[in-house]
Image 1 (tube, one colour):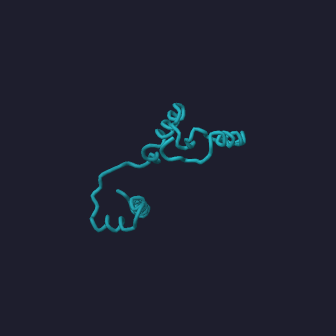
Image 2 (cartoon, rainbow, N blue to C red):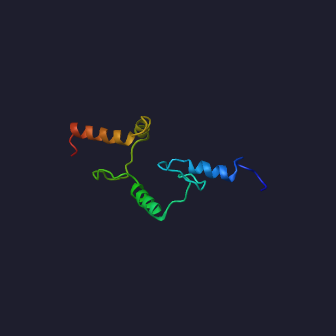
Image 3 (tube, rainbow, N blue to C red):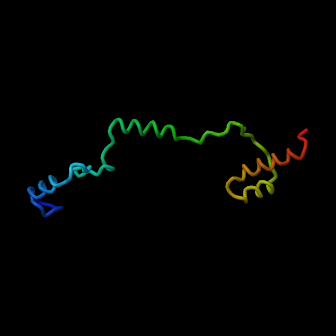
Length: 104
């Protein structure tokens, strides 16, 4: 046989080693690792269904409404400078203002 040899064992020695593998262990003897093997049709369909459920944004509380709001640049910059979650902090500041002021 020409080309690279991956083992110096004879065929008989390889067969003897394979027969010596305990039967209670899970071995793949075709040279393909369990993680590298192609998925079965059932596994593929299960994976597609699972991924379809995880796609998109997380479900919100349903209590918020998206609007377009014009805000002074310095106010917006100040909230954005506080980092991630600045929109929630801006919402909290507006709620706090409503607690101390009459909206009418």
